Length: 130
Image (cartoon, rainbow, N blue to C red):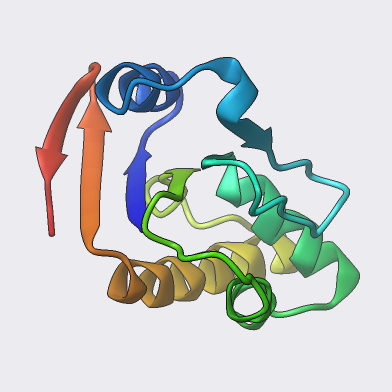
């Protein structure tokens, strides 16, 4: 598994599509109102939306993602997870938003540990972290 993260509008998805020779048909877009991931797709885009949906549903994103991955029957080697970096900036005043950022960070730590590759994309340029 691979993890790509970076700020908003930094070219994360474009980088993944080009670098790994994939198309839009390979992408699952996480939604802010559904704590679901289609792991039959090769790119899982918008993990911050998945963790937000988990937060709203009272679920721990790290546990929910682990459950989804543990139940996948195919090997994980070809899956690429893409997330916006929501760890920077002002600490939100809203309690739920603070909890979301914390839980998203914990999910990202656990996911990075499971991934063979972690890259940060800034201005369309990838930096290998792991």
